[in-house]
Length: 208
Image (cartoon, rainbow, N blue to C red; front, side):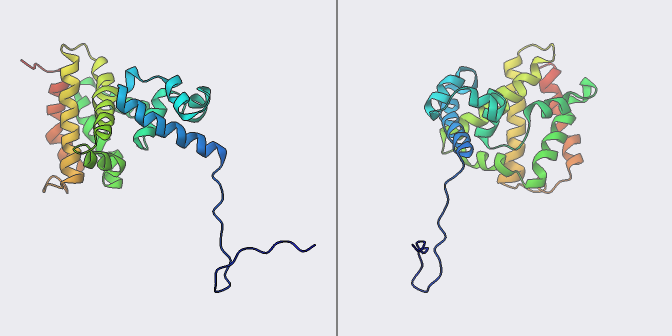
């Protein structure tokens, strides 16, 4: 018995059939999609890994398997190719009095090479998509600066975290989205020198 021939286009060329995605990739994509919805609706702290896994139709253990935990899943849901723990370690590695400068330097070293990358894409979406706005708030104000401010013995930690977030989000919007000159093309160290002291005051200075 002869084997069935492949389907062909009218000109005789074979039709290349699209294969199914690997099961693991399907699981990861289902978790990320469910996580985006859960984080947008409940925020990071109230989101539950079990609820996300249930919505994705997979075992909760898959979150640790594929993403290393809730933090990793959140970063994947934001589509940001960075490790939050590594970023915080870089910012805190040095004299506390220069933390503001390291924030700017780290931010630019991550996003300048890709012209803002996924972070800029999120910023472009925040005005029209509440889900994107929620993800940006959670990442910048809570997961990044909320943790960072907690390492200092400063008053009004929530206000300080929000002020730091406003500075960094504003920098990202002006440099990568609106491209306000000369800020958009300024050398990183110029911005470190100009913006670092403001962030330092937000972190540890007198806000009265």
